[in-house]
Amino acid sequence: MKYVKATAVLPEKLIVEIQKYVQGETIYIPKPEKAHHKWGTRSGSRELIDDRNASIKYAFKDGHSIHQLAEEHFLSAETIKKIVYSK
Image 1 (cartoon, rainbow, N blue to C red):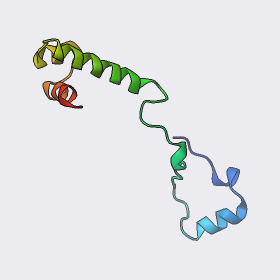
Image 2 (cartoon, rainbow, N blue to C red):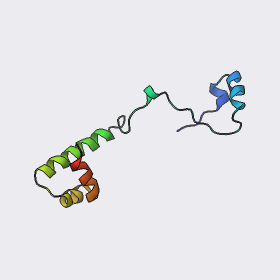
Image 3 (cartoon, helix red, strand yellow):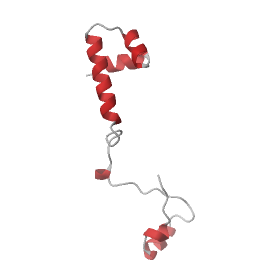
Image 4 (cartoon, rainbow, N blue to C red):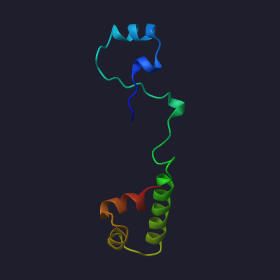
């Protein structure tokens, strides 16, 4: 997250109004809901994890054990269970 000086981007009247509530503090102004992206969608990480999880489910159905899959994918047995038993 980068910081921007309020005086560089906001009109003076708005700064005066904000100063009624906060002075000398850092405030966070969130993006509008429609501008949010779900985790990993922009970087492609979500797709990689979804593909990995599908591969794990397929291998489990094909007869691989929870322990084998945990070692192959460097995940805990509990994480593998969550993946294979989820819908």
